[in-house]
Image (cartoon, rainbow, N blue to C red; front, side, top):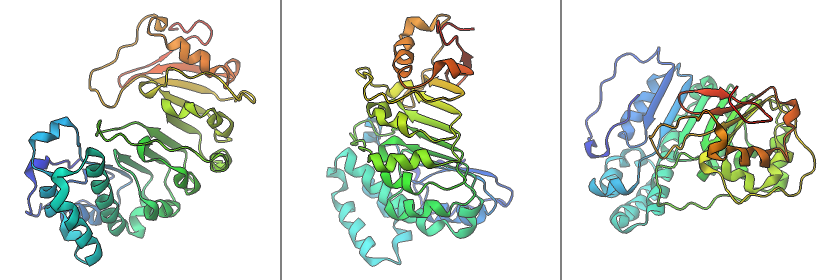
Amino acid sequence: MVIPRLESISSTTISFPSLENVRKLEAACNLNSGNLRYLLSKCTNVKELVIYSLNYSKTMDYVPSISTMLDATHDFLRHDMWLKSSFAKYECRACRKSMKKKVEIINRMTNILLRESFDHSIRNNLTSLTLASWGFDEKNIVLLKNFYNLQTLILDCAFFNNKIIENLPDRLETLEIVAKQNFAEANFRLVNFDPVVLKKLKEHKGITNLTLAGWFLTNTRIFDCLPVNLLTLKIMCSSWVSSLTPENVVGTVIIKKLILGLDDPNYSIPIYIDTNPMRRQYYMIFNFLRSFLDFESLEELALETRDELVSIDKVTYRIK
């Protein structure tokens, strides 16, 4: 794992040991781009890749402005003068940018960097890809189809859109769309899904495990478009919308396992499961889901935190 602090940006090249045996790599986009490209070029056999965005929250007010970071990562733009000029304009006005604009700048740069770094070998070898607090642009989304052996894809809901559904790899088995926001003030507008595109999610025969941020359920059409061979559905409670009411119920979907995820990615405070989950009002969420999911056919109903998975009774919602 290579995740440097923003204050420590340096043009110094890091000398890594042999990386041929690395199977899992986690790195942040604020790593000097030359070093990040070097890492990706040497980790020829990496199977699991996690790329983090910068953490632009209130705490970042105490570190150098984004212009410092932009200056240190311009090296990968040297072959594209239009892009270099474009980012130079961002650089001189960066300190006056809104939080959302700063995130967009980093997102663009990360996309360009990885588009140049993801060669055929990396795309073909990866079985798991996580984009934490950033997302692919349209050019990289189109390339998703070329990740031929990708089985797990974890994305931030703030950057999830219709194009991604249209370009999901054929061998994908696990899709997670969660709220990993490192930028509380960015105020991203969540996408409204095209009903026709959602049908393509249903037609994907490989996906058996699906994790959704709670806000997805504001569009109840999602239940009519769950992957046809879905076995496990996880709903993240931290982004749950409390005002949801069932509507447009066509029929109930049969799955084997339903999990309610309790962790909030924006907080490090551990969550503990009570002896009686009714106290935390989880039953209201389950009652809502009963309108769309066949609880009688469930083989397991569970609550999950980062430390434990607890099975509960699907009638009383009490811990077994």
